[in-house]
Amino acid sequence: MVKKLRNFKDLSHITIQFLLASILLSGVFSTVQAQTDTTSAPADAGAATAAADNGIPTTPEAISEGENLFSSNCAVCHAIDAQIVGPALQGVTERRPLPWLINFIKNSQKVIQSGDEYAVNLYNQYNKTMMPSFAFSDDQITSILAYVQSASSQAAAPGQAAAGDTSATAQTGGTAGQDAGISSSYLTIILIGLVIILVLILLVLILIVSVMTRFLKQREDLDEADQELMGQRTNFKKIVTSMPFIGIVTFIFMAIVVKVAIDGLYSVGVQQGYMPKQPIAFSHQLHAGQYEIQCQYCHTGVMKSKSANIPAANVCMNCHQQIKPESPEIQKIYAAIDFDPETQTYGNNKKPIEWVRVHNLPDLAYFNHAQHVNVGGLECQTCHGPIQEMPVVYQYSSLTMGWCINCHRETEVNASDNAYYDKLLELHEAANPKEPMTVESIGGLECSKCHY
Ligand code: HEC
Ligand code: HEC
Ligand code: HEC
Ligand code: HEC
Ligand code: HEC
Ligand code: HEC
Image (tube, rainbow, N blue to C red; front, side, top):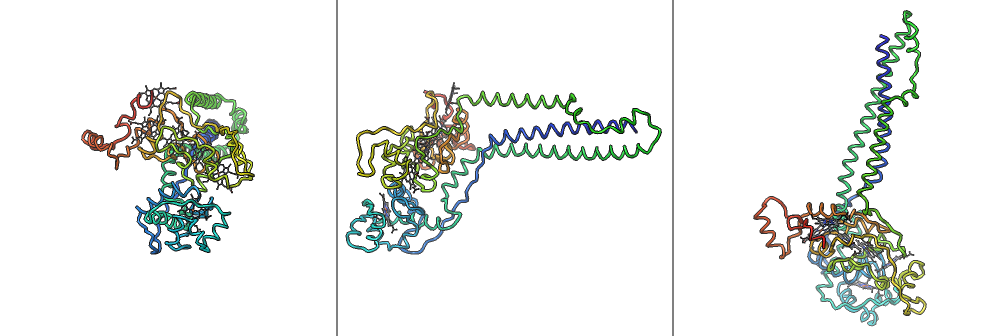
């Protein structure tokens, strides 16, 4: 009986050791995880709503043609639900009749000079800012208005303000993070389960020990050694200094050291998360997010050249000649191009704004934006993350060779509507009819494609 008691006591000590070790482990694990975890919240796709019959088309073709025209001609000064240089256009198709809108967009000055009361008031309200004339056909203008109308009804529906395309990009940007999230949350669950089981075992053992002790206390035929054992309390100091416990702790410690060292080696030259301070507090969250200015408006190279380009200060001046001239940040733009807001004149003492480069591939690698954005049809956010939510840009992806290669293995080539690929697609389908045509199958893993 006394021997059994001793066994149970030993067992409960070992359980306490394991318990302490696993609490330690899960603590360490969750801090490591907090550093590496990326979360994402895909937005709900907005639903299209029907519009009143006012002569403005509601077909998806007209709306998408209108969206293109709008973003390349009007988005500089107009947003749907925010005032930029001109008024927010939400509901304008209900505010004004169609013929008026067509005339105004073709030549706003003509309408204003004709003495149209609404136009004159609006012009004065906007400090006599001239809206340029546009040589569009009536059809082109109605398609722009079709886009404005459909975007207005989407913006009006709360929670659905973000159009379908932004939610799609949020999702593609999120998948990589989700995979990592799932595997690490499994590990957390396993660790928590382990701790709970150990606590339960410990409780049962303590119960048994106390029942046995109480039972043995009633017996009088025990010798001194046995009595001592019964009077013994759980000795934490002994547990912590015992060999098995020290062994476990040393093992965990070594494992962490090795993991940190390996991570460190792998990340030499990798600058994921790099977020340098910029000379002007320019915010993508404000410009690309809140005011929905298209990326291409500033990064003009993405569709046609290797690099995306950082906009020159005169692009900023399209708006900031008028918007917030009193802000010290905006005055840094004025200083860079030597603009005097008092006299509205330019001097000759220009110096470029020294933006700090965030993304940087080594010279040995060749990357081309037009190929990925224009031909491949990829969204910026797939590689750059949710830029439209960043007050300060940071490097979202690792930009390692493995990152490029992984995507080339997994991504199907965007071959529809591209005559260039018709022949390749035929060949591919003849050879492997089952498999999709990935970038890998058109040679996207060949060293010379990415290395000079
Ligand atoms: C350079 C800036 C600028 C551009 C580019 C511009 N607008 Fe405007 N827009 C204005 C301003 C400013 C007003 C306010 C009236 C005024 O000052 O003439 C205005 C007014 C309007 C109005 C009347 C709004 C109302 O509330 O009644 C409509 C409609 C309009 N613009 C449509 C367009 C369309 C469509 C395009 C693109 C084809 C466009 N604008 C491009 C600056 C611009
Ligand atoms: C109003 C102009 C403007 C718009 C619109 C804009 N950007 Fe930028 N972008 C800038 C400027 C200026 C910089 C350089 C300063 C900085 O890094 O914040 C920059 C920097 C960047 C960088 C980092 C470049 C580097 O140094 O490696 C990326 C990536 C980027 N933009 C992507 C986007 C994407 C994606 C969008 C659309 C969602 C967008 N930008 C919209 C002006 C703009
Ligand atoms: C299409 C119009 C447009 C363009 C182009 C544009 N901005 Fe802006 N910017 C805005 C608007 C609108 C605001 C918000 C102003 C406000 O808060 O009243 C703003 C705000 C800012 C602010 C914050 C000012 C403050 O003190 O709150 C900074 C800084 C800024 N812009 C820098 C830039 C730079 C740098 C560029 C060129 C790379 C640029 N912007 C291009 C429209 C534009
Ligand atoms: C397939 C991934 C990918 C996509 C999609 C992508 N980029 Fe990039 N971007 C990169 C890489 C990689 C670099 C670094 C290039 C270098 O250092 O040569 C970069 C660099 C940049 C830069 C820094 C200046 C430059 O040209 O090197 C800007 C600005 C930028 N991207 C904007 C955009 C915008 C805007 C879009 C969407 C229209 C976009 N990118 C889409 C991968 C991508
Ligand atoms: C998000 C996915 C993605 C990432 C990340 C990516 N690419 Fe691509 N890449 C594509 C797609 C899709 C195409 C096919 C475009 C087309 O239709 O031609 C492509 C094509 C290419 C091609 C042309 C291949 C050929 O055979 O014509 C080169 C070169 C290339 N990528 C280089 C790079 C480099 C360098 C990187 C990393 C810095 C990179 N890519 C990262 C998706 C990606
Ligand atoms: C899809 C594009 C792509 C392909 C295909 C590709 N690489 Fe790379 N490679 C890169 C990029 C991007 C880097 C730079 C990565 C970095 O800075 O971490 C790189 C870096 C390297 C480096 C330098 C590593 C270092 O640590 O600096 C070597 C060596 C290399 N690649 C060899 C190859 C060989 C050999 C092949 C053919 C089997 C190949 N690459 C195919 C994109 C590619």
